[in-house]
Length: 294
Image 1: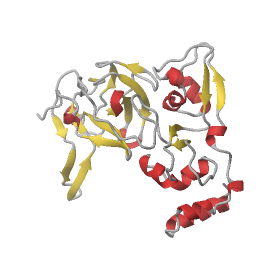
Image 2: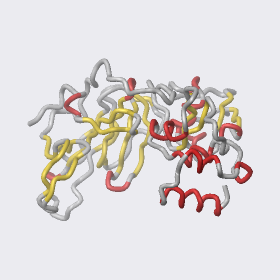
Image 3: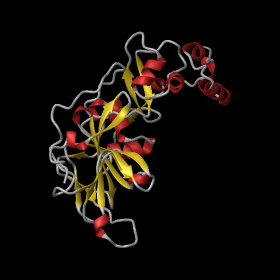
Image 4: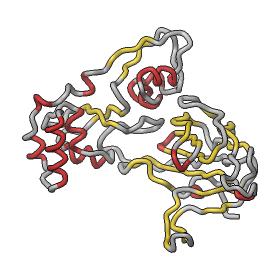
């Protein structure tokens, strides 16, 4: 869609005119072809991995795994042919009669974006592309999917030994701001260099620097669970790598202040569950039996 079309769409959203009728009045001729009509094919060469293929096309490994079921174990084989979308996202099946707004609400997206990337058609196709949504083990790629409760919790612990929780999950008072703030995980006290461990088997969805998280590792597990490990000094894993419970993800970083007080060092740990609202933070104590208050 051209700049004028985008500007009009934004204006419709801002003024409350964003309705199915307004969508239908957009010009299909101004839209790019649907993303699903622009898939390319890649033949895996010797030595390539999901990570290197993703880097070549500007994709995360989870996107490639979502489009290619044979890679969902985290590996590829020479000669294997892969479908490659133009950018990150997920192909999902849509029940008949769904609207763009309903699909957007299911995947915490925007109806105007879904409308545009899928060819500006009024009737929602049975298979659509949702940008920014990642595949993970156990996901149901349908617009009517609901999150499932894990049958069994994660059995590991993020550190070699149980540690004091210095910041707990949920609403907590923040003296500096004089108000309550919501913590999406727990901070576990630990000495710099202590190994941070995967609490369960899964696939590394992200390993790198991410703003306030510092060095961050994200692991996708079965049944829609995800764990996040932040404030690492270095990274011992890479995106697309399969990990087992207890595998080392990296060491705890030293405290960022200038007083050289190792007592301030910690690892920040989150458990998230996939839902129509995206990856929703959960209380780690509900999923990790060893996560007890100390």
